[in-house]
Length: 266
Image (cartoon, rainbow, N blue to C red; front, side):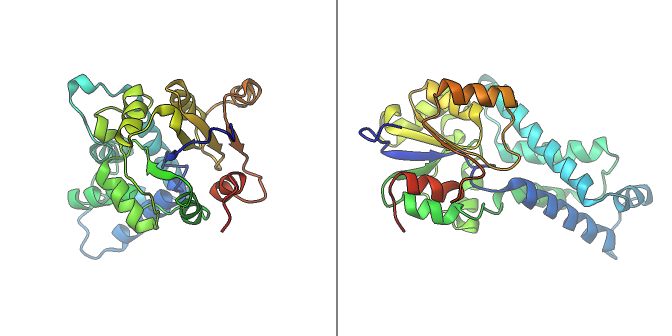
């Protein structure tokens, strides 16, 4: 990253980069299952009760991962010409589908499924996220740039104490990353050129797409988040298109390490 031409704005991928969705969602599904099983007023069928009783936290972790994977497939294949569908709508529909596939329909009521599907609004941040964002605000314009919808990101910012200056969502542009409409539209919303912006993300695919639109690329490795193969990751390192690369093992974790490299002191 050029020290003579640093970005004016840092835009952040959110799921996995800023918040630990895996732990939050797994724990929530597990707890809500236990609560339903213990409820004296539950009307769930006996067969569903037996199946749900056998599920472990590891089973719910698998379901959480499949839920997340369905989101990635949904956003990558979304056709904006057929009307925009929010991530909230997808999360609700897919949770129902996941329950149906496991013969767990009836574990929760329809209203409970709706409520549980909104756990994505209330994800816990990585330990360095809130403090790191506070540091970035001293030097940069900060904003989300997520496929999460506007209300989701607004709720998350309040819940997790994430002090972004702006909330920008794919919903603003009626398209999903990696569409150039999102990256280019975000820069325009901030009154900047794409070359004035850097994307901070834990996913090289997202960064590659942003880089193709003129963004600088800041990679912050997070546990379990990168889907590229080891060979693809090594190739990205060799090619050098990532402007700042923060490994999982860096002495100062995550965003605080990025702030240190930018010369921001607490």
